[in-house]
Length: 300
Image (cartoon, rainbow, N blue to C red; front, side, top):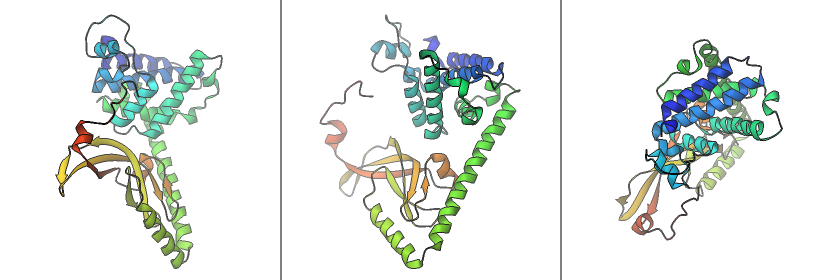
């Protein structure tokens, strides 16, 4: 199972990024080798948690191989898009924004290898390089390695500058958006502002379970932050009933009064909004231990 070890994936990713860095950044080959390097760096991060996460769950041979058993047959690894989905749930700093870039580069890689197209020939650096370095930094940090170890001392300083510029640009964009919505909302008459805030509060009563009330950074009214479930705590008895607390990571916010929309965890962080929230739901022992239907094994 050595070929699925985090260190082997790291070394392969390092070999590919070294090939990329030996080429001029304006060359399509730089983007191609970088895309391959990112995939193996991602697999290195995932297998750092456990190699079984890299296994195709539809094949017993793959799962057993990941646990170190020598079995007949050819083990299959998880498709790379599923790798990125799992990393989004497990690696701090790797959210939907980063996953979209990784999926995009994987798509271009597939087009390069399996079609007559040359997608990297028309790919400008401005469309991917800053976010690419950010993803590399996130994966390296998760594995307790440095970006310098991965990119080398010649490239790392400029990569850091691009990552910082990315954060600065996002901060400027979000703060500008908040200021614009505040200006428009404040320009409305007091009766209209009160009516909009009241209407927003009414809608909140019917919020989905993966959403929670948050104060809007632009107008101060109530809005909804929504996100994905990250873990479920052990059930407990509260008020003579069985309850389960569920923890979510926020990925979006919408103000129902002024219309402000924040589309990612990074944008929520810019305005200082707490990214995690907990919701409590009612449950029963039957639901916990005897579900009505068994889930299909390969329903992923």
